[in-house]
Length: 501
Image 1 (spheres, helix red, strand yellow):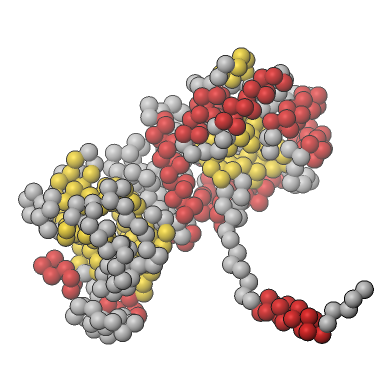
Image 2: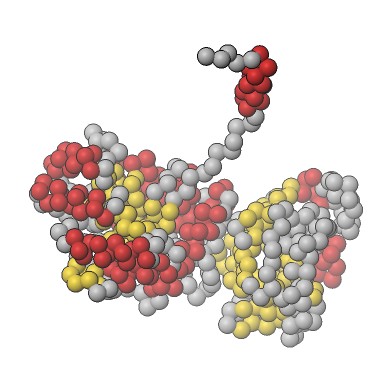
């Protein structure tokens, strides 16, 4: 055997030491996947529900037992499904790029039925079975779950279900390993008068999957709402899920009929994706607005409470549909079909009210070479350049070197990274203003964060460049009006919602 040379050994040692000195790679946050419980589409066939899931951008479902198959396959989805029907169903799933990860909620009476159920689950590649089995069957179920590799998630229907309270349920499954866990139904906790956020935090270490719901009230009659518009603190629950490092599936499930079901589910999906992209500290304080929030949301979100439940953060539209709470020259701005449009006069649209600390979310659409912005804490609207902080919106400045790209604090601090603003396409913006701190998020990415205390000298930025502010930003008033600028080119806004802190 040839011995390594000293030079080779030294090279190896150097490489080892170099690797050891490298800073550790940042730990990536594990996040859950969005799924669909097909009970939501119980009026449709399973094949139709699969197509709806795909339409919503969802690639994993929990199917419920007994749903009509459809798609040219006769019969219903049951554990005794014939092999040829199973093969046909698998083909349809593959074509839609959807998998059945879970099956339930199903009740089986005998060990033989459970044995058949586990075999069926394995044949479809199912990861978990949601059920509410009698406690005396758990030893046998746990054994079969271990053997098959398919987990059992114990579901909680509301009172008088034996498993309605997760405290008792966790005690019941304490003797078992990860093969037995929870299917946490947040809506049923609320329907039992339990705080869903508190119970979810308690249960998460043993949760296999979540039937996620946001209800209009904490009563047995509570109805599903688009996530973020009910009283269940959907943002807080999703923050808890992220904090726990839960990497399973969060399932959308609507149990009440809705005249606009697909739109409601789309809003749930949008809220979930925004909540996954938002800074965690903002999400856990409820600073992520429901998508397309407006004063006309069914079961008004603001001031809603459950039975002895906490107040829900109150988001409000920034402007009324008739602009009665706004100030601008007549004809300079108009509203149609929920879209606020600048009419090219160069006039800024101002709130009549002063705002201090808040979270502001909105969508904007800029035309080619458009230049606009959002003014914060303006104390003199006749000279906003020197008496306000402007968050830039610029299609024209998309490649400029100065602090004029979208998300920049104009004249003060450039946005990074730069987000390409495509003419004629809607983009999302969020601005967080608290004390002397400002954060700007564009299309889910944080592009600017500033502590105004760093601006301690008049007309001078921390990097030594100049600005037009007569006073250092550290002394800028902590309250003022919000304005939408019409500087040049077409600019439109919609879904402007504000949460005062």
